[in-house]
Length: 137
Image 1 (cartoon, rainbow, N blue to C red):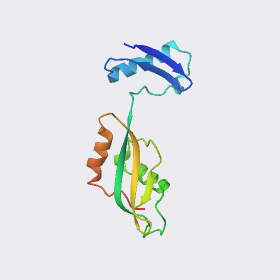
Image 2: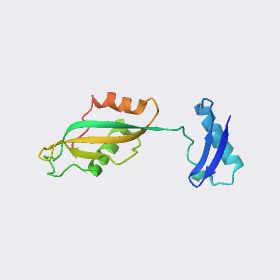
Image 3: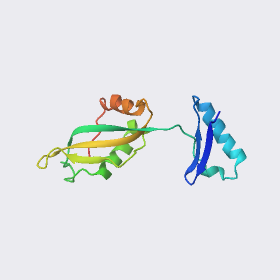
């Protein structure tokens, strides 16, 4: 199945030209548990390579009328974690909040996420977000 296996301080890298299925990932985890002297709690789930996708959210108030606070990356992270459509989303970077113009009270939020190569997670968020109110802080 594997063309090469490498290890380093960050983990084990298995390279193959074959198509990998979820069952193969479970076989890899079982092999690692049985053949290497490692604590099984320290083994993360094997995963396929990922790509980064970005989400751009426009026309978000920069200043909250309720709390009179400015929108920050930390606020955005809290809002995302509380929203169900982001349950399976892992941020690749901290969200970036950018004012549209220096005197504007409207901002744009850039969110980088770990995604599949076909952008399925970004597409799901985009489809779901049309039905939900994401931002109120």
